[in-house]
Image 1 (spheres, rainbow, N blue to C red):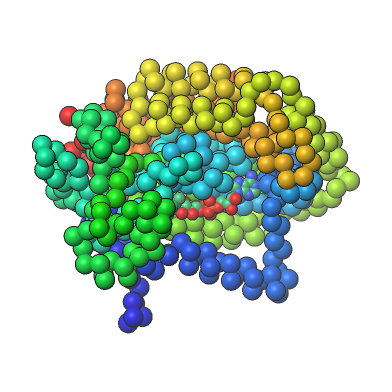
Image 2 (cartoon, protein in one colour; image 1 turned 30 degrees about the horizontal axis):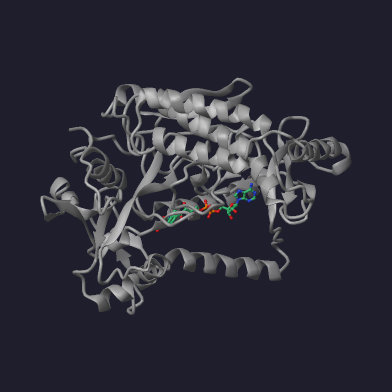
Length: 478
Ligand SMILES: Cc1cc2nc3c(=O)[nH]c(=O)nc-3n(C[C@H](O)[C@H](O)[C@H](O)COP(=O)(O)OP(=O)(O)OC[C@H]3O[C@@H](n4cnc5c(N)ncnc54)[C@H](O)[C@@H]3O)c2cc1C
């Protein structure tokens, strides 16, 4: 604030303002501050940046401890080993597995999947957060209209019997337009899909700020509203914005302990790629909290781990050469496949499958079909054709190399959703619409085996917070 205090605002599910912000540029400013720190440490020779390298797989020493990674340079296509005693996975979420997502196209889950296929455990994959207010953009990711718009007074409505119907305010009197994200998304789902109320034939509801004083809103939300105006051609100060839910965040991720250590000795994880802070749901603002806190913890744990190790990795004793050759062979073989399958169309089918059957609302038959479809898609990968033979910047080849990893992570998500016969946070089963703490107050843990994913459950630590029933009426329960 101008007085030097921290500005706080409401986000969904909060009963008082608790989220620090800097107008609508909070993420940008965090990145800027982090980037400045990297430059500072780089100038001192303490940090070395390796840009455009894509992680392909971990390597291990003779005792199964992490000993480095194999990575490929996305421009030169050079494959190289980077030896080290430890690594922090900070590779983000998996939105691209779901087509209709607010995530960056780089949020593929590929890196996490590769770690899982080399022994890391993956937890709670079925808990996927849908953000209620996103705007479809042609041929690209969805534009997120942040919860802060409702935090500043934006209202959600649709037409009913010729009148504006503020259904969130009617269904969630305690929270109004700022009910928790999962509830709000399902309320919009109910209006659009069960009550079949559309806007000019579009599956959407209105997010409206036209009643708010423009000068005030321009200061707090100007950036995002300008972006909306620019991308859609609609002036949000004059016309309500058309929005609908989109996949936004993965609460699931790599299994870690309180030191951010994964199940592979020497491998740590922080940020959206790990599972531990949000349970089945996530409050707005808490991802960045988890990134900052988890990142710091992971760094400290890594130092502790490295100092306690006496392994000395060197190329000769590690026999890296065969692993590098194997990785090169995988790419060559992929490039020379002479099938008829287009990798981009396979991803499209995967995304539709995940959206329609493992999306906001799930049920047994759909989930069984989703798992079958995923298995079919993996088999079809044997018949890929990569039309780009180039040895430089071959995006298609890299994309195809990662497709299997996305499909396998999707398998873990869908199977976990099938097994969890209850509804909790970001996982809603229309055939089991209630929470079943007796059976499922548990963390789902998966590991990858030759037969596919294998699952078990871990107890949730409820020592500090007793689970309580939710107070709000579930929109899809009636
Ligand atoms: C539109 C939008 C708005 C959001 N707003 C908020 C908010 O207001 N508050 C909040 O708390 N959260 C918010 N979130 C969520 C939050 O931004 C993310 O969860 C968080 O940024 C994830 O950070 P991360 O560092 O874990 O991963 P990312 O920031 O996604 O970084 C992952 C990095 O890993 C790289 N990578 C991936 N795979 C590989 C590989 N194989 N090899 C090498 N590198 C790889 C990627 O290129 C990327 O640079 C928002 C998310 C979105 C999409």
